[in-house]
Length: 212
Image (tube, rainbow, N blue to C red; front, side, top):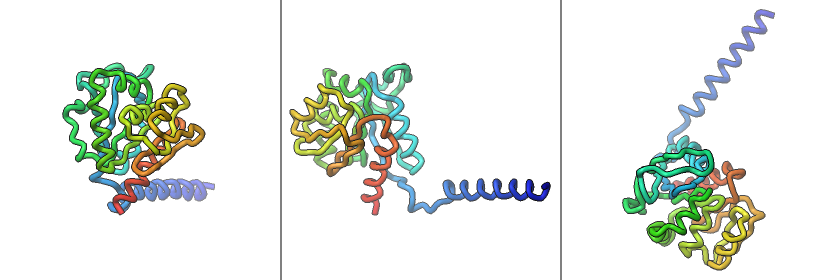
């Protein structure tokens, strides 16, 4: 019995070493160092979506920068951080530095659209779209894509909000809220936090395509 116990302990140790080796010693080419993502946020943004995407992408070596109207501190949606400090202001954004533009949901997208300086965000998205950057939006994030007029003829999905769906349709998008994640060219959209993993994996798969 003692020998069996020792053998089991050894197997557990070996399994831990193998798992650790996979994550920490895996070949460099399997990672995505050098890629950068810009997260566009405003008061009421969904911190869970921001954190979830950032956590997974950071594990692959991708650096996320957050941008908003101010760097003085903004509030997340619901009970999330009340004083989150973005890295840079929209005025400081150099679109050419980023491979992905990401818009989380929550109330942030609507606040961007209604903000007096919302055009700054639309200009960022218009430039990114014209340069073929990946633009990824989840939940209410696609609403900003409609406001920036970059969804004409594109297949998208989003949270089933009647006003947002109407605006997307009016902007020429083909909206199907029964689909969890949709990629159409350089646009990636998703219905909400329940499909966060699939959404992030889609972003990663497109980046891997570009790397290869």
